[in-house]
Length: 183
Image 1 (cartoon, rainbow, N blue to C red):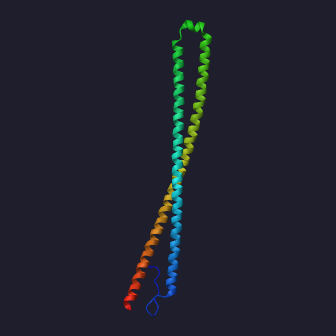
Image 2: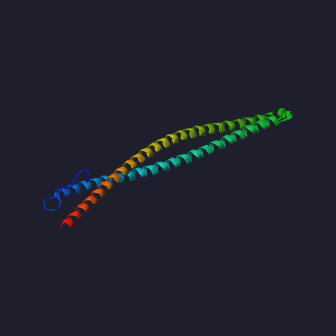
Image 3: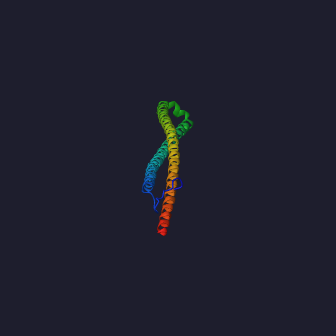
């Protein structure tokens, strides 16, 4: 009631039109507050959805990293085994079993190349996924910031309106009580 005072009638009461106008104004403010509360609920839901999506993307990224590490270990072990075989092969066996060794080397080279190709593919996929996840996380973070800001603004408006309503109702009650005591 700080911006509008109810007009009293000549004979101890309030003008009906003033009271009705004021009540209508309070109802409009209440409707606006309800709409803001609904918006806040939507923002909270969006925040929860984005948080879940963020968690899912992080989990997927972790799985890809584990697969990549396993393939890199397999490549490393294969290369060590080849180096061991090359170092430990006897000269006589080299002369007599040259074909066998060459076949083994060819096969191991193919395995290593396949493992490298797979690892590179996984590295590229993981890199792309990490990049995409990072972008999605950034977008989610921005949406969360916006939703939080909107929520804070809406809650501030609701609080101000409730304070105004409480103050007005207190003054109306006080004036009604003063009117009764005058009788």
